[in-house]
Amino acid sequence: MNSNGVVHISEAATLGLHAMIVLACDPERRLTVKDLALALGASANHLAKVMGSLTRARLVGSVRGPAGGFTLARGAADICLLEVYEAIDGALRPHNCLLGERRCTGTCMLGDLVKDTNAAFVRRLATTRLDSLARTWRTKRAAAGRKRDVGAGRGESAKRGRSVSVAARVTRR
Image (cartoon, rainbow, N blue to C red):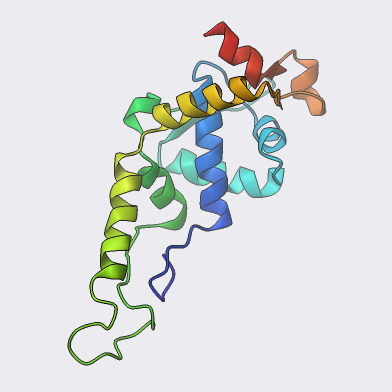
């Protein structure tokens, strides 16, 4: 949340949220930063920092080495988006004034609009679990008939035979 009360999700938190959903789609499989960066079309360097934050928050487990990578530290049904957000951007402390500081005397001109919007956003993050987003994403990808390789094409991951299309993973479940 930025200082003027408008909902803001940093690029790092956005990457973290997306990476966690990719991991939730195949929770038994270890994915490297390169695998995740390729799947998300993101910078591997930036994503590595994000994954470090998620590891420190114990939301993902990591294994180093040639067969290493990241997996969810616990079940996708047990991880909410608020945990992921706060692991990266810190505690969510909504501000309820769009002006960034109190300028109104007494009651806000916008009433409870900003306060209620912020509360709804925090509630939604707290009640949305990774498993439901992963399930929805897999279904939409399968319906669209799209394939996006996770771990394919570049680097050592592809050489290790880690390439699996998201559409293929959906049909195996």
